[in-house]
Image (cartoon, rainbow, N blue to C red; front, side, top):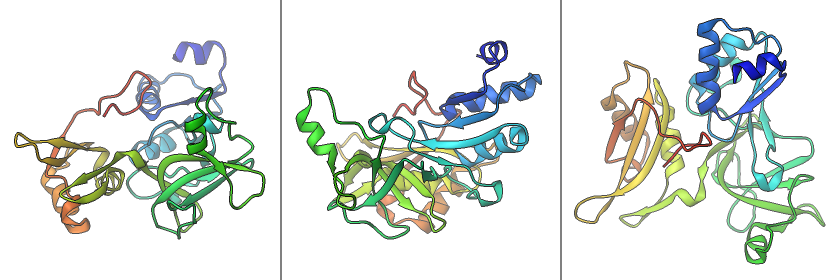
Length: 268
C-alpha cells in the first residue's frame, strides 16, 4: 500500500480507521516518505478520539486529516469533521461533523419530527446525493426513501443510524438503531453504552453485544481495548456511576484488538 502511494504520488487517501491507524503507525515508525499525500480521511466506521489525536499530532502539520461519514444510498460521503484539535472531545469517538454543502442532515424521532440538541434520534439525509431507491425492491425503497417534510419535492434517506446534535452544530454518531435489544423488559441502545464506555479515560474502542447465559437469559457483555494501565474495575465503576443499572454490562472483557470484517469494520 505504501508503495502505491509513493510510486503513484497519491494525494488523497480514504479508508477505515482499522486500516489507516496501523498503516500510519508503520509510516511513522519506519520514517517513510509521505510527502505526496495532501488529504487523509478516516471513514466508514467509528474512529476513536485517541487514535485521531495521534494522527493529528504526528501528521497534521503536513497532511490535512478529517473524519467522514456517509452511506452508499447517499453517494458514500455526506459529512466531514475538520475541527482544530482543541475542539476535539476528550474521549469517545470522533464526531462525524457537518453535512457537505450539497447534503442536509436531519435528526428526527419516529414521526420525522426534529429532536432537540443532545437528544438521540434517527439520522436522515437529504440533498443532491440521495439515490432514487433500491433496484427491484419497491417495498424497501418505500420504507427508506421518504418525502422530505421540510423541503418540497425532495426525498430523505432514513439511515437507521442513531445520532445527536452537539451544541457546536456538529453531529455525534452513536450507532445503529437495529442494535437495540430488549433485556428484562428494558429497550436498550447498545450504541449509547459503547459511547459511555469510550468516554472512560484510557479506553480506545468498545463494543457491546447481548449474549444468552446457560439458563436462556439475556445479558450485556462489553468488549474493550485500551491503554496498558486501564483496569476493568475502573471502567465498571465509571459505568455504574453514569448509567442506569439495566444499561451496565454484566460482564466486561478486555481484548488486544477488536475483530474486524474483511472490509475493516467491527465484526460483531
